[in-house]
Length: 278
Ligand SMILES: Nc1ncnc2c1ncn2[C@@H]1O[C@H](COP(=O)(O)OP(=O)(O)OP(=O)(O)O)[C@@H](O)[C@H]1O
Image (tube, protein in one colour):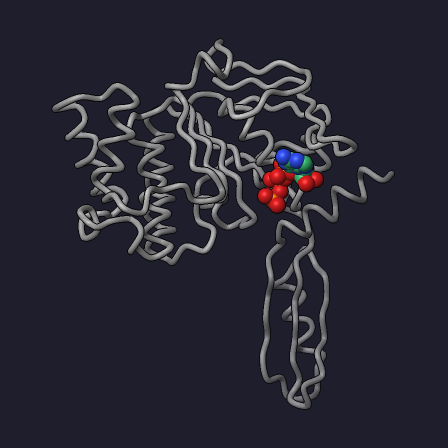
C-alpha cells in the first residue's frame, strides 16, 4: 500500500531524512519509533503531501502522495481543530471534504461516535473540550472517510486511559478491515498491544525493522531490589524471574521492594546504537 524508497529531505545542513525506506502492506500496523529528531514527522509530512522530498520515490497504492490524498487519513502530532465549531460539525466538514454525503456521512459519524466514545461531546464546541477529548475528535476527522492508509503521529500523546483504549481499539479494527497504518509513538507497550511490526528510525533512515520478538525479545531488562536501609541493587538481565529468585535467595538483609522492568524502547535504541557503531 505504502512504498517509500530512499527518501532524502534536507533543511540547510540538517538531513531530516537521509535514505529513508519503508514499506507498509494493507492490513499491517507499523510502529514507527525513534529518538526525537529521527525524522518520523518529516516522513509523515511527505506521505500526507504537506512537503516534498528532495529525492527518492514514494507511492501510495501505486499513486503519488498528491494523487492519493483522498485515500490517506492523518492525525498530526499537534492538534488542528476549529475551536468555535462542534465535534459533529468537524466530522460533517471532513466527511464532506472527502466526498461523503447523506446516509454514508451520517452512518460514518454514528460509527465513529461509538468507536471513539464521542457521544457526550458530539454537540460541544471543540474549544471547550479537554485535551483527551480533542485528541479523539482529531482522530475521528482522520478516520471519517475510511482511508486505506492511516498516519497516526503520536495519537495518544498526553491522552488518558479511556482515550488510549478507544484509540487502540479503533486502530486494530481499521487494520482488521484492511487499512495500512503507520503509528508513531514513544511508548512500546502500545505497539505490543496493537501487534504492530516495528520500524526504528535513526538519523533520517530506518535502521531496523521486524516484529517485537525479533527486535526486543532477548534484550536485557532490569531487576531492582530496594533493601530496608534504602540501598538499591540493580541487575541487567535477560532472565528476570530467575535473576530475581537468585537475588532474593542470596540477600540476607530485609527487602522493602522489588521491581522488574521489561526491555524498553531505550534498551532497543541502545542495542542498535552498539550494533551500528561496530
Ligand atoms: N521545517 C523544518 N526546518 C528545519 N529543520 C527541520 C524542519 N522540520 C524538521 N526539521 C529537522 O529535521 C530533523 C527531523 O525532525 P522530525 O520532526 O522529522 O523528527 P521526529 O522523529 O518526528 O522527532 P519527534 O520524536 O521529536 O517528533 C530534526 O533535526 C528537525 O529539527
